[in-house]
Structure formats: structure tokens, C-alpha cells
Image (tube, rainbow, N blue to C red; front, top):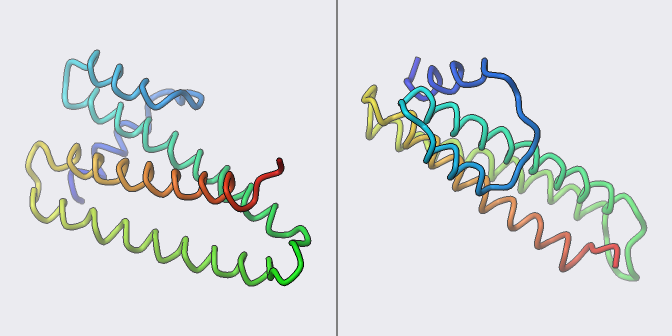
Length: 139
């Protein structure tokens, strides 16, 4: 089992925290005193970002179930969103797998892989948020 999975599994046994601002991740790392506590910081941030992404996707999906403006096809947009999300997930996994292979079972493998995942989630969430704000806003 790659070290990334071991570190994330260990960190996931820690008490769950509610969603918090992204800068809490930086504070967590600053206050960390070991690789294990670093791994917990990464796992907590990844869980926060995954939950944020689920909320964004749920909101997008709900808005795409409504009737759209004339000439729009929200059903096709919803199908395209599902296809795009599946492709993004496969890309994220493959991209971060490169880091796993570069580091092998070294001490920093889990943290480097965690950084890769967090970067991908932050970027994807920003895109999803922009779609909500720019194209499917309730305002």
C-alpha cells in the first residue's frame, strides 16, 4: 500500500472537524510537529475540499434541473457536467499518481501526493464556483 494511502488512513482516524477556511490548513501545518500531524493536516484539508466540491456539484446539479433560458439545454449541460467531473477525477488521480511513482515509499511521498490532490481540488472547486457565479447564479 503506498505511503500516501497509509498516511491518509491514519489521519482519517482523527476526530472529524467541520469545514473551515482554507487558511486553517496553513495554520495546521505551521503548528504541526511531526510527519503524522502534517498528514492529518493534509487529510483534513482534502476532506474539507471534497465536501466543498460535493456541495458545489449538488448546487450545480440542482440549478441544472430547473428550466433554463430559451435555447438552453440544461439536461444536456447536466450530462456534460457529469462527464466532465468523471474525466476530471480520472485526470486528478492519474496526475497525482505520477508523484507517488516519483517518491516511491519515501517519507515525503504522502505529503507530496497530498499537495497534488489539494491543488487539484482547489483548482476544480474554483472552476465549479465560477460556473455557479457566472452562468447559473440565483441573482
